[in-house]
Image (cartoon, rainbow, N blue to C red; front, side, top):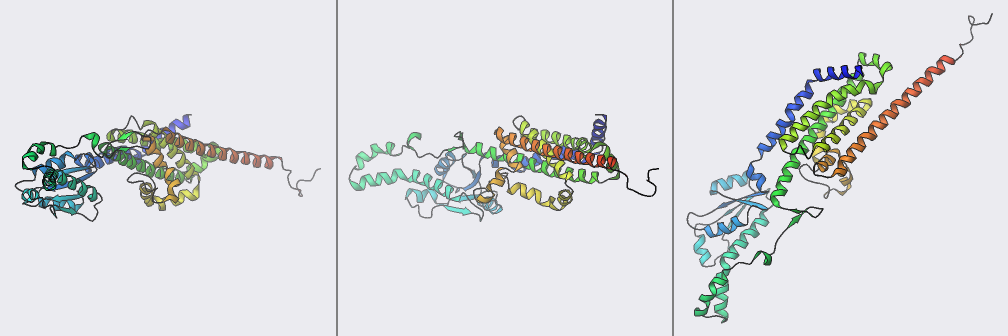
Length: 396
């Protein structure tokens, strides 16, 4: 126990990389949160609207009433709208002509609104349908009045009394509504979906950062086992006893960094148990990789691909499993995916991480016990073997 305490104290005092992670992890999440402005997290899609100098207010009022859900509409000048769409900050923009109100009064809606779309735009069909719905709402009273007059249902005298009713809109129960829900049936609003996406991105970045840190810790542990000091201690203590205090000294700063980063992301309370299970799995993985010399020597070459694999094989940015069904099992059981699911409230994912960590530790302990038993058996055979016959070993 004294050896463990002294090794842990030395590791915590000398491992500057771990304390750098404590500062870097929350700083990374804070910078990622500030990199996305508040309006981008309020609605998944931002759409610019350019109104004429005179008119277009009725159209804007109806468009604004439909915003805030799947799309957010922003008033802007034409130059600003073109710049924001070209840079990809806004998905698209609606440009209204200067004679918008006059053409609307004549019910001349052909090519009335210009839709400015960038090459990367994905939501422009929805925006186009929303703008068309607003136009139909504006012109429908005049269209209905013209139909009543032309068909003879009403005359000039009676149609005036019908105008207030023609301008009435359908109630919420009579409209076609689009609702979203989670896989377990809970209702989900678009702002909530955007907030969940932001939190998922931050926790996913933290998970990848901790994974890279654990792999570097495995490299350091594997190299330390090859030092002359460790080789002299190996026959006395065994590899696991030697590595456990150094591993604990490497993972304790990671625990502090994870707690601070989750606090900066605003999800420390809900993600505490998934973080502990994830770090336990990373610790057991680092210990297993450090004991395998071939894998440990290959890790420096593979390290540049680890962040990309974490982003592609886990739903940090987007879930690619529907597009690549063959990789779906790998994506489903990836450690980063399990950590994200644990943070989302699925305790089975955290339990799977803890079970995988226990299995790895059990295999390492079994391998160490088998190696020790084999070594003891070999030394016993050496002790009981008879000395070879020779001129100096004859019985007198």
